[in-house]
Amino acid sequence: MTDKIIELLKASGATAYEVSDTVTEAWEFYFIGHRLDQNRIRDVEHINVTVYKALEDGKFLGSASDEIAPTATEAEAKKIIDDLLLRASYVKNAYFELNKENTQVENKDYDVEKMAKDYIEALQQIPETSTEDINSYEIFAEKCTKRYVNSEGIDVTFVYPSSQVEVVVNARNDDHEIELYRMYKAGSCDKDHLVKELTDTLRFGKDRLKATPTPALKKATVLFSTEDAASLFQYFGAKMMASMKYRGLSNWEIGKEIADDVTGDKITLRALKELPNSSANRPVDSQGAPVHDMYILKDNVPENYWGDVQFRYYLGIKDSFIAGNFSVDGGSSTEAELRSGTYLEPVEFSDFSVDPITGDIAGEIRLAYYHDGDKVTPVTGGSVSGSLPELLKNMKLSKEQKQYDCNLIPSVIKVENVTIAGAE
Image (cartoon, rainbow, N blue to C red; front, side, top):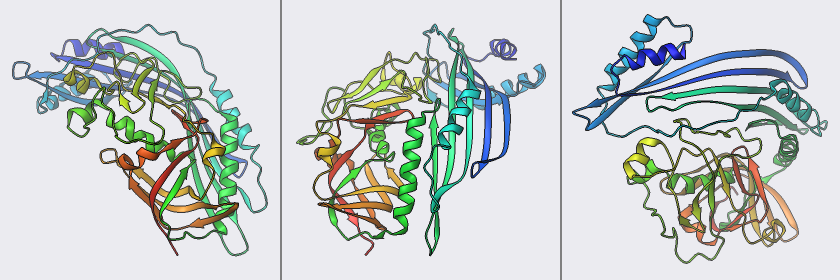
């Protein structure tokens, strides 16, 4: 069907086009406790088409996208394409060109059954107790085969794994019971990571039940040691997106350091072609651009913008792509060295966010550990907030790193002068 769609696009009068055909073979399992409730095998195909139309003698380029079912007739597909051309004529983006470089790919096979089995075995290793246990979990293991074709001559097919597990954990005492929800995305299963994360989650549930109100600390040192820390570094990646730069939402410039008077560790951020078990390992991005290792920031100095082809074209950026995997280099201190003194370590937020434009951070605390010398107290309530552009000046990063799906980051980040609104 994809070849038939390409023939129709060539004859349609479209200025340019893109076709993405993804076939997904998936195994799914649904457990209540550790009892299998149901399972299924899924084999689906999605074909997405984007049509481009030059307007006003090529000054503008309109575009429109839609999905065409693999079971569609030729007449049905042609009607969708004609409708897309009409819709594209109403859109006026400044002219740009699609990617042109074709990439040779060596594919390997992935065993979906083994991926699912690895998740089941990992979840059976979680050290449950009579008061902290797994309520339920769902496993989704996928092998995806994607073909990308555009009007500039790119025609590439590649295979990649994608998986996800959702887990509900319960913790209870004589007075009440709580639930903690977790979702882990990956390429294939990292058993050690999953067991460690869920073992910590059981402990968090137990401590949440006995937590006291967060003290009104006003300004405090905060230590980030969970997946929420990845949000801090996503801000740095967002400021280096070509679309943010073109729209005037980032004032960062290549070769110019992003902050003055930095006394902490500087940020080195890279885009990586591959990370073990990442769900974002691809030889090309979603628009056919070849992916490779690339510095985005080096010691707080911007080196390369990244992002989709439209805004890269506007900025005149060559040899870049839509990044999927990110790595932040470790800092100058060990975890043990950063875990000294008095600090607050939030491990559960109702929500934690970093504004990609301003860098403002905010999170409502569900569980944190207040470290005061040798005394560690579980606390709950209140919030953390601050401005990352200011806080990064004294940010300290651990030498050790930890991976969360497509993000490899320092395992501990220590930040001073964070605003703490207490609950007591």
